Length: 242
Image (cartoon, rainbow, N blue to C red; front, side):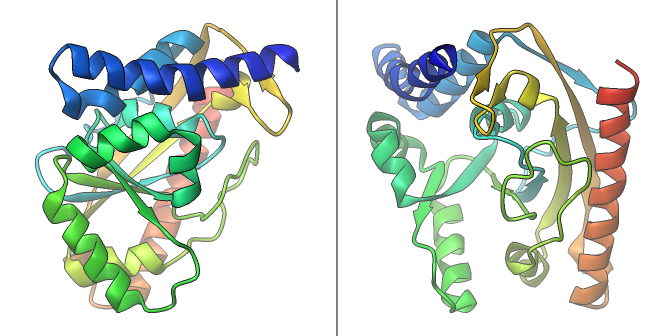
Protein backbone atom coordinates (compact mmCIF):
# COMPACT_ATOMS: atom_id res chain seq x y z
CA UNK A 1 0.00 0.00 0.00
CA UNK A 2 2.92 2.34 0.72
CA UNK A 3 4.19 1.76 -2.83
CA UNK A 4 0.74 2.51 -4.24
CA UNK A 5 0.40 5.85 -2.46
CA UNK A 6 3.98 6.76 -3.34
CA UNK A 7 3.26 6.23 -7.04
CA UNK A 8 -0.05 8.13 -6.75
CA UNK A 9 1.68 11.12 -5.17
CA UNK A 10 4.45 11.05 -7.76
CA UNK A 11 2.16 10.82 -10.82
CA UNK A 12 -0.89 12.83 -9.77
CA UNK A 13 0.82 15.53 -7.72
CA UNK A 14 4.53 15.83 -8.52
CA UNK A 15 4.34 15.13 -12.26
CA UNK A 16 1.18 17.24 -12.59
CA UNK A 17 3.39 20.16 -11.55
CA UNK A 18 6.52 19.11 -13.45
CA UNK A 19 4.64 18.74 -16.76
CA UNK A 20 3.28 22.30 -16.85
CA UNK A 21 6.54 23.79 -15.60
CA UNK A 22 8.48 21.96 -18.31
CA UNK A 23 6.01 23.14 -20.96
CA UNK A 24 6.47 26.72 -19.75
CA UNK A 25 10.28 26.51 -19.69
CA UNK A 26 10.36 25.06 -23.21
CA UNK A 27 7.93 27.72 -24.45
CA UNK A 28 5.27 25.11 -25.25
CA UNK A 29 2.52 25.92 -22.73
CA UNK A 30 -0.21 24.33 -24.87
CA UNK A 31 1.47 20.95 -24.34
CA UNK A 32 1.29 21.01 -20.53
CA UNK A 33 -1.19 18.15 -20.31
CA UNK A 34 0.63 16.18 -22.99
CA UNK A 35 3.92 16.35 -21.09
CA UNK A 36 2.23 15.15 -17.89
CA UNK A 37 0.59 12.23 -19.70
CA UNK A 38 3.85 11.24 -21.40
CA UNK A 39 5.73 11.29 -18.09
CA UNK A 40 3.04 9.27 -16.32
CA UNK A 41 2.98 6.55 -19.00
CA UNK A 42 6.79 6.43 -19.02
CA UNK A 43 6.88 6.15 -15.22
CA UNK A 44 4.59 3.10 -15.22
CA UNK A 45 6.52 1.68 -18.21
CA UNK A 46 3.34 0.99 -20.14
CA UNK A 47 3.65 -0.73 -23.50
CA UNK A 48 0.87 -0.29 -26.07
CA UNK A 49 -0.05 -3.07 -28.47
CA UNK A 50 -2.86 -2.65 -30.94
CA UNK A 51 -5.41 -5.28 -31.83
CA UNK A 52 -5.02 -6.34 -35.49
CA UNK A 53 -7.24 -4.29 -37.85
CA UNK A 54 -7.24 -1.29 -35.51
CA UNK A 55 -7.79 2.04 -37.25
CA UNK A 56 -6.15 5.40 -36.71
CA UNK A 57 -7.59 7.87 -34.22
CA UNK A 58 -9.27 10.66 -36.16
CA UNK A 59 -7.48 13.89 -35.30
CA UNK A 60 -8.22 16.16 -38.25
CA UNK A 61 -11.85 17.04 -37.46
CA UNK A 62 -14.23 17.28 -34.52
CA UNK A 63 -14.90 13.77 -33.19
CA UNK A 64 -16.47 12.20 -30.10
CA UNK A 65 -14.12 9.50 -28.81
CA UNK A 66 -15.93 6.80 -26.82
CA UNK A 67 -13.49 5.11 -24.43
CA UNK A 68 -14.07 2.38 -21.86
CA UNK A 69 -13.21 3.39 -18.29
CA UNK A 70 -11.31 1.13 -15.86
CA UNK A 71 -9.20 3.17 -13.41
CA UNK A 72 -8.04 6.67 -12.59
CA UNK A 73 -4.99 5.95 -14.71
CA UNK A 74 -7.20 6.24 -17.79
CA UNK A 75 -6.89 10.01 -17.67
CA UNK A 76 -3.25 10.07 -18.77
CA UNK A 77 -3.29 6.78 -20.73
CA UNK A 78 -6.24 7.82 -22.89
CA UNK A 79 -4.62 11.18 -23.50
CA UNK A 80 -1.65 9.37 -25.07
CA UNK A 81 -3.83 6.88 -26.99
CA UNK A 82 -5.90 9.75 -28.42
CA UNK A 83 -2.62 11.23 -29.72
CA UNK A 84 -3.25 14.24 -27.48
CA UNK A 85 -6.25 15.18 -29.61
CA UNK A 86 -8.91 14.89 -26.91
CA UNK A 87 -10.55 17.33 -24.56
CA UNK A 88 -11.82 15.90 -21.27
CA UNK A 89 -14.97 16.53 -19.25
CA UNK A 90 -14.21 16.68 -15.53
CA UNK A 91 -15.80 17.82 -12.29
CA UNK A 92 -14.37 20.87 -10.56
CA UNK A 93 -12.99 18.61 -7.81
CA UNK A 94 -10.29 17.55 -10.28
CA UNK A 95 -9.03 21.13 -10.48
CA UNK A 96 -8.56 21.13 -6.69
CA UNK A 97 -6.49 17.94 -6.90
CA UNK A 98 -4.29 19.20 -9.77
CA UNK A 99 -4.21 23.01 -9.45
CA UNK A 100 -1.07 23.63 -11.53
CA UNK A 101 -2.21 21.44 -14.41
CA UNK A 102 -5.70 22.95 -14.23
CA UNK A 103 -4.37 26.52 -14.33
CA UNK A 104 -2.09 25.87 -17.32
CA UNK A 105 -4.70 24.05 -19.37
CA UNK A 106 -7.34 26.70 -18.64
CA UNK A 107 -4.98 29.45 -19.73
CA UNK A 108 -3.50 27.78 -22.79
CA UNK A 109 -5.01 24.49 -24.01
CA UNK A 110 -8.63 24.59 -22.72
CA UNK A 111 -8.41 20.78 -22.85
CA UNK A 112 -10.21 19.94 -19.59
CA UNK A 113 -13.78 21.21 -19.42
CA UNK A 114 -14.84 21.52 -15.81
CA UNK A 115 -18.53 21.24 -14.99
CA UNK A 116 -20.91 20.69 -12.10
CA UNK A 117 -23.04 17.58 -11.91
CA UNK A 118 -26.76 17.82 -11.39
CA UNK A 119 -27.86 19.97 -14.31
CA UNK A 120 -30.93 18.68 -16.11
CA UNK A 121 -31.09 21.10 -19.01
CA UNK A 122 -29.33 19.24 -21.82
CA UNK A 123 -29.88 22.02 -24.34
CA UNK A 124 -27.91 24.51 -22.27
CA UNK A 125 -25.27 21.88 -21.53
CA UNK A 126 -24.89 21.14 -25.23
CA UNK A 127 -24.54 24.85 -26.00
CA UNK A 128 -21.86 25.04 -23.32
CA UNK A 129 -20.00 22.17 -25.01
CA UNK A 130 -20.30 23.94 -28.38
CA UNK A 131 -18.67 26.99 -26.85
CA UNK A 132 -15.89 24.90 -25.31
CA UNK A 133 -15.21 23.21 -28.64
CA UNK A 134 -14.91 26.60 -30.34
CA UNK A 135 -12.26 27.74 -27.84
CA UNK A 136 -10.26 24.53 -27.54
CA UNK A 137 -7.01 23.84 -29.39
CA UNK A 138 -7.72 20.10 -29.44
CA UNK A 139 -10.29 18.84 -31.97
CA UNK A 140 -11.89 15.89 -30.11
CA UNK A 141 -13.94 15.23 -26.99
CA UNK A 142 -13.29 12.10 -24.93
CA UNK A 143 -16.41 10.53 -23.41
CA UNK A 144 -16.91 7.55 -21.10
CA UNK A 145 -20.33 6.28 -22.24
CA UNK A 146 -20.57 3.69 -19.46
CA UNK A 147 -20.70 6.58 -17.03
CA UNK A 148 -18.36 5.20 -14.37
CA UNK A 149 -15.29 3.03 -13.85
CA UNK A 150 -15.87 -0.63 -14.66
CA UNK A 151 -12.65 -1.76 -12.94
CA UNK A 152 -11.94 -5.41 -13.83
CA UNK A 153 -15.34 -6.24 -15.29
CA UNK A 154 -15.32 -8.63 -18.25
CA UNK A 155 -18.48 -7.02 -19.62
CA UNK A 156 -19.39 -3.54 -20.79
CA UNK A 157 -21.87 -1.35 -18.94
CA UNK A 158 -25.11 0.03 -20.30
CA UNK A 159 -24.56 3.15 -22.36
CA UNK A 160 -25.43 6.54 -20.92
CA UNK A 161 -27.11 8.44 -23.73
CA UNK A 162 -26.50 12.11 -22.88
CA UNK A 163 -23.35 12.64 -24.94
CA UNK A 164 -24.56 10.23 -27.60
CA UNK A 165 -27.53 12.58 -28.01
CA UNK A 166 -25.09 15.46 -28.43
CA UNK A 167 -23.15 13.57 -31.12
CA UNK A 168 -26.36 12.63 -32.92
CA UNK A 169 -27.91 16.12 -32.76
CA UNK A 170 -24.72 17.81 -33.94
CA UNK A 171 -23.92 15.06 -36.50
CA UNK A 172 -20.40 14.71 -35.09
CA UNK A 173 -18.28 11.71 -36.10
CA UNK A 174 -17.97 9.12 -33.33
CA UNK A 175 -15.16 6.62 -32.75
CA UNK A 176 -14.98 3.76 -30.24
CA UNK A 177 -11.62 3.07 -28.55
CA UNK A 178 -11.06 0.24 -26.07
CA UNK A 179 -8.01 0.03 -23.78
CA UNK A 180 -7.52 -2.96 -21.48
CA UNK A 181 -4.79 -4.08 -19.07
CA UNK A 182 -4.25 -0.93 -17.02
CA UNK A 183 -5.43 -2.62 -13.83
CA UNK A 184 -2.19 -4.67 -13.91
CA UNK A 185 -0.24 -1.44 -13.54
CA UNK A 186 -2.65 0.80 -11.63
CA UNK A 187 -5.72 -0.27 -9.68
CA UNK A 188 -6.93 2.16 -7.02
CA UNK A 189 -9.67 -0.24 -5.92
CA UNK A 190 -7.03 -2.74 -4.77
CA UNK A 191 -4.41 -0.14 -3.84
CA UNK A 192 -2.12 -1.70 -6.42
CA UNK A 193 0.47 0.01 -8.60
CA UNK A 194 3.37 -1.41 -10.57
CA UNK A 195 6.31 0.17 -12.35
CA UNK A 196 6.02 -2.47 -15.05
CA UNK A 197 6.66 -3.10 -17.77
CA UNK A 198 2.96 -3.70 -18.44
CA UNK A 199 1.35 -4.38 -21.80
CA UNK A 200 -1.96 -2.75 -22.66
CA UNK A 201 -4.18 -3.87 -25.54
CA UNK A 202 -5.89 -1.21 -27.64
CA UNK A 203 -8.57 -1.34 -30.30
CA UNK A 204 -9.43 1.76 -32.32
CA UNK A 205 -12.58 1.17 -34.33
CA UNK A 206 -13.72 2.81 -37.56
CA UNK A 207 -15.57 6.10 -37.66
CA UNK A 208 -19.32 5.98 -37.01
CA UNK A 209 -21.32 8.75 -38.69
CA UNK A 210 -24.55 9.64 -36.84
CA UNK A 211 -26.21 10.99 -39.97
CA UNK A 212 -26.30 7.45 -41.36
CA UNK A 213 -28.95 6.49 -38.79
CA UNK A 214 -32.58 7.58 -39.33
CA UNK A 215 -33.34 7.66 -35.58
CA UNK A 216 -31.41 8.32 -32.40
CA UNK A 217 -32.54 4.96 -30.99
CA UNK A 218 -30.92 3.09 -33.88
CA UNK A 219 -27.73 5.10 -33.39
CA UNK A 220 -27.59 4.15 -29.68
CA UNK A 221 -28.26 0.49 -30.46
CA UNK A 222 -25.40 0.48 -32.95
CA UNK A 223 -23.02 2.17 -30.51
CA UNK A 224 -23.94 -0.33 -27.78
CA UNK A 225 -23.43 -3.30 -30.10
CA UNK A 226 -20.12 -2.04 -31.51
CA UNK A 227 -18.82 -1.06 -28.08
CA UNK A 228 -19.55 -4.60 -26.85
CA UNK A 229 -18.00 -6.20 -29.94
CA UNK A 230 -14.79 -4.17 -29.70
CA UNK A 231 -14.53 -4.70 -25.95
CA UNK A 232 -14.84 -8.48 -26.32
CA UNK A 233 -12.29 -8.55 -29.13
CA UNK A 234 -9.81 -6.52 -27.09
CA UNK A 235 -10.51 -8.53 -23.92
CA UNK A 236 -9.68 -11.78 -25.74
CA UNK A 237 -6.52 -10.23 -27.20
CA UNK A 238 -5.35 -8.99 -23.79
CA UNK A 239 -6.29 -11.83 -21.47
CA UNK A 240 -6.68 -14.96 -23.59
CA UNK A 241 -3.77 -14.61 -26.00
CA UNK A 242 -1.12 -13.22 -23.65
